[in-house]
Length: 483
Image (cartoon, rainbow, N blue to C red):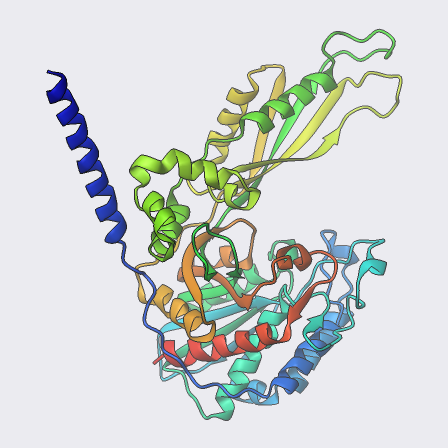
């Protein structure tokens, strides 16, 4: 009998290893063939144009009354003077004064695409100016970098696209399909007066786009375990942004006679429970697709694990949850950001509130998040109110549009693997869901390891070669993918 049991166990083990190794070996690359395009760019002129664009302080503020629009006017005048060929050959329309729509008439209007960017920037945090190696609006060019606010987010996109179009016009190129350049002026504060107004115009004119490409993912290193190449992450969706307000009310009184549980203590316990428990995580949607694309490119050990998620899913989730950046693609995140309670040291607050910012994964709703928060807190004395936006729709990856973007990445960035992913921040692309078949989010630059920290922080800068490669990407995309 024991021999039979041992034989059965051995058979199961052998079958298991044969099945899992077979699945590992059968992983096929999802990287398309590369279509290279020869691109000869006047690099110094392009770099100087980017540098000049940085000097215009087109700063967005949440309080719109603080916005100084004079630099916006000056920036738009700069574009017209710098790219006269583009303004002469393309139809140009200013939307809500400060956003700009260019239409490059193609050989057909059947399946137009839109290339998006924005030229507003975030403020420089007060008191940090002295920490900048170069002044934040100087546009200094040194041996390796262009410095200043907007070099990464997102004048690099505006200038990169215009340089590409200007280059193609000089070559006499005419796209096979209509091409729209869509430049917003208030993306950093939601895009309601820029991108949303452009969309309203497109709807009014009956213009529907095959796809739009906005900023979003970039080319990064060391993002995925087991992949030695750089990863070009192309956003096919973006997480929503919602806020949960937790409120506790109770009796106040003098701090010399506190109850065992005060309003502030109860609120603190609720916040602690949320941080300790977190929302459920899973490998689904865009994250699942991401691993479908990167698994074939992994070293054998990692490929074995990721190709057999039916067995190793708990291990994979543990790996992803170990870092905030990868944990964020598996679940709706919880970030306590604002706490309001008492205003005097010796008086117990009668009311305490906390705001929890949540970046919402596809599939979660405001109602489901509210119920999950109430379940985790398990305290009916804590009132929960949730408002905000859920995640965007998820764009397709099994279509020509996604493949076209992949090909342009691979043609201009060697030793790179492309993959879909979910963008954990926000972009103007969310406004375009009703006027485009698909919305993609990718900024074609190779990002420094600390580049994401610099993007809205101190010492924002871009490597000169990364900017030149971005121009080549847009040239390649337009040339290869619109014929």
